[in-house]
Amino acid sequence: MNSSEQTPTGGRDPVRVFLVDDHALFRTGVRAELERAGDAVTVVGEAGSVAEAVAGVAHYQPDVVLLDVHMPDGGGAEVLRRVRSTRSSVVFLALSVSDAAEDVIAVIRAGARGYVTKTISARELVDAVVRVRNGDAVFSPRLAGFVLDAFADRPGAPPISDPELDLLTPREREVLRLLARGYAYKEIASELFISVKTVETHVSSVLRKTQLSNRYELSRWASDRRLI
Image (cartoon, rainbow, N blue to C red; front, side, top):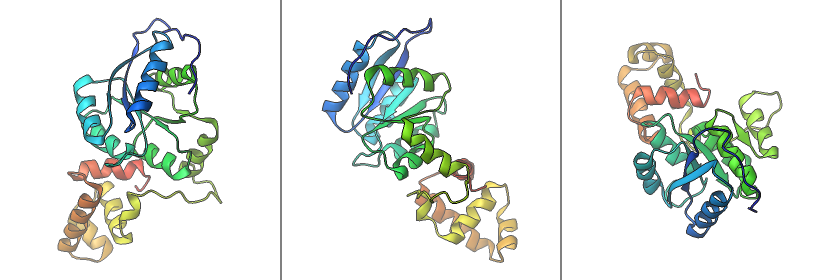
């Protein structure tokens, strides 16, 4: 990532940014680049693991989290899952060396507002941070097509894998889909010709695999993946 000229704030307060990457040297470089890029953003904190990221976001309450995709203890999607359940106002922008379709789709499905690669310039990164804070979706040019293919249901579009969704069996997906639509356990059992106890077993399995706590979180998770 190369530095560039200063970027104006446009009259608004600086965007409060929190950095998440397991490489301390990279975090130092990004912080330095952002701080040299003008007063549009301010780095309020950083983390090198999922647990540190969750605690740091809760403590610093940033506007935007710059999030690495791959980390040893769970990665960007796991940070998103934990933080979004309690702090839905925080915006996430993935910043990764990976430009693989499955990585892009996984974090977007988890709730990131954009995805840029680490070849981005400092000026472009500041612009991306400001834009996602203001409600835009931002992608490095060639990555936008992955998202369109995955979410537009275009005929002939290649299937994009979702590691979390792939953990569920076909029957668990059926149960989850009906649950997210508001069906009661008894109604799900009748619809799928199974017992209520079997429905409960499937729901418990889905909760365990997704590491969610209740049917309301499951409904949002299913909606994000267009299962409803």
